Image (cartoon, rainbow, N blue to C red; front, side, top):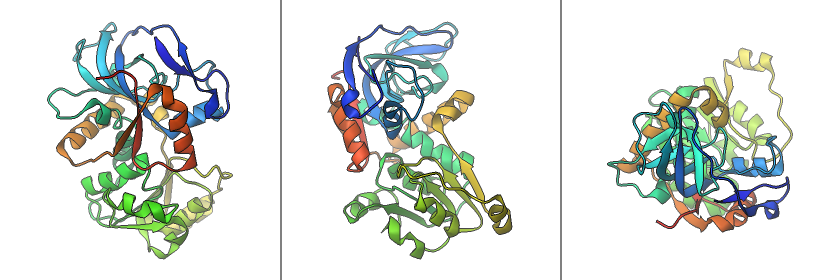
Length: 320
């Protein structure tokens, strides 16, 4: 089958379209004929060698498509069924066929949801719901601040906060050109990141930027506020947080990593994915999607790395 591989760590130019063996599902797994694969910052980290993966490696943490085969013990799914799936535990989504745990697969039957949109949900929308509900434990009426509000997961966090009953929802962006884009995704207000200190106090802050933004975010937390750390897009050195400061000020700092969570709690991650699919189908979560061909994976990576993307990029693997 065709697949995009990482033969060596490096820039986007190392990505290569190869022929690889078709994977077969093991116990509790399904294989999926991939229609679309989401393009994410996580796959850039694999390609750069930030995450230690065996080479050659097929990236791809989320897909949509149709069930190809069921492994031993799988129930509740059928061959040919349209699905959205998290492939984040073992990756492999940039390919014509991928395998994943059946727990991480959400059927699309009965939903008026195209496969292109469905491929954009498993990573970002599922993450948004888990971060705010499971980790931050948001309460109705609370205020929420989200950094990188115009990006793939940022565009979902604002809407998920609304869905979960937040009061004030504010986003930050790195450039003025992104303000209008981000405002369309559930935010009451969108500000430039370097001006966020003037935005007030927040009960919940979600930071995927790191660096000075992380330090500022901690300062903006209200008493009993919770900051969830889920990335370091700035590439800055890690920011140390004093345990004494946290307990003196009644603040909480938590981390969230979807791959680790999905490996440890696949059934719970799967339930969040089902919830995301239903919310997207009902219009409660809106996803802005742009499609490129699988062969354009390097271009997708360049655009994500440059910060030029708003919404979500997906790679078309099979014309449907």
